[in-house]
Image 1 (tube, rainbow, N blue to C red):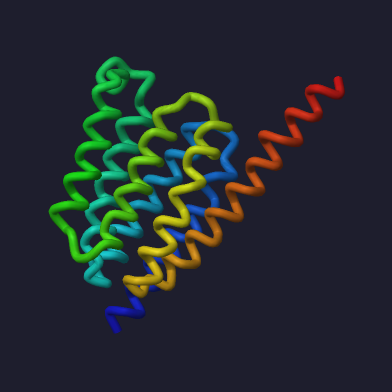
Image 2 (spheres, rainbow, N blue to C red):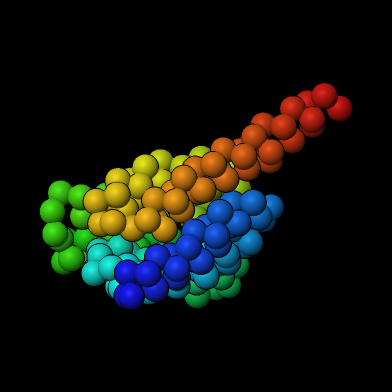
Amino acid sequence: MIETIAQIVGFGGAALNGLSFQQKKRKGIIGVQIGAAVCFIIHYILLGAYTGAALNLIGMLRSIVFINNDKKWAKSPVWLGVFVVISAVSSALTWVDWYSILPAMAMILTTVSYWLKSETKIRLVTFPSSPCWLVYNIITGSVAGIITECIVMSSLIIAIIRYDILKKEKKNDC
């Protein structure tokens, strides 16, 4: 029963993750990611995959700070370093096997991408994190996580084509 609940909650996170990269603006991308992180924290706890849960908690906190980076308290570049270090330390503290490093690598890439101002750069720097999460999800039995990463990779490719390639070509044609 817990496994079923875990997967259902994870599918909520999957849906939100897929929607996030279809947001036109940076705040929209990050805002929807906060909801997805909440779902995945619960999902990974129920699966006993504590590295994934811890890193999603860190990711949620990171997103809250980064979405507010127009405010004085959240502008400091120190935040970038803090979240990179906390991701690495969390991975070490929740270490199970070699695959425990994969979500940390993914979170570090995503942390760097969310710090960027350009939506195009956010999408491009975030993309490599999906294969890391995909392998972790396969190993930990996260069906929702596997589906999420397939959705996220597809969504990122669509968004890159839609916003970064076609819009750029349209501007060049004018």
